[in-house]
Image 1 (spheres, rainbow, N blue to C red):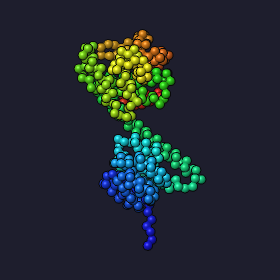
Image 2: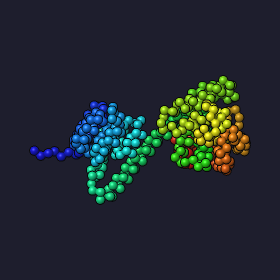
Image 3: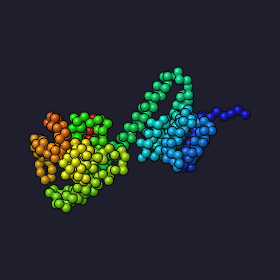
Image 4: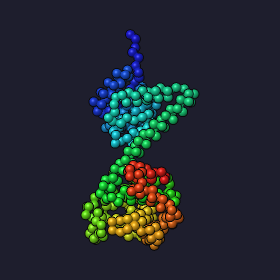
Length: 373
């Protein structure tokens, strides 16, 4: 009897029987020979016994996870290609899988046509990877293609993170009309001083995120206190001060914002230790919070508030000098003083939400800060 030619051999690994069945049926219709199992342990046993062109594995399974299966499976079957399946909220983990050698990742729920297309691409990579090493051009092409796909995946995840940040900022903006313009200006002020002080570029996004979300905790402050036009009473001020911890608690479980937490928590600390909420002093205060303190005061003194008109730059400059060593880090003050006044004017004018169309769009306004990095 003549053997039937198949499109290739695929191993499907997922702990949900319904998903395994759908994937098996879709691939079978396209001529693939499929095996399936529900755990990483079973998958490794199968890989040790027989070869597969492509392994499609869920990232989250009981016992051996998809990531562990990827790492061990590539050692057992270096010629096989791996596709990882993940939920939409775990796209970042899919990107990590690509960094560890997966050809691509699929975001659940995905159409079966996407599965078939991805398996074909992975199968092609698996077969060509087994060709003689003299095919240098192919490997260069494969590396370039994989790098481009990884870059797109990272950009997609990064964009999703920033859109979440914008949404958080918009929630606060609904309650406090001053917030959007203030947040955009202090982002740019903070970055300008950070660049002057030689802060590494890899930290800049964390600085921007922290500056943009520094007052997010005010979401939890009652309107009669948050929107009060006059001076707050001692009791009201105590309540207002809780916005720092509210903001920290709101963001602390978001891993991608971990680098912004230092600024959110410490943006009301003082260099002399008389700030809040922890009363830390000097270099114990995160650098981004020390820089932000100057940026925040500059903006507060040079913009209109409900209870007073804006002052001029000279007055803000004099106040910052006077508070050097007390409220502010002298090194940050020196950086501030080294920047010409016209730079501050340009930033203020370019981030005015009343006239700047870019800043009226949350995403565009925040990405405008990226352009300074």
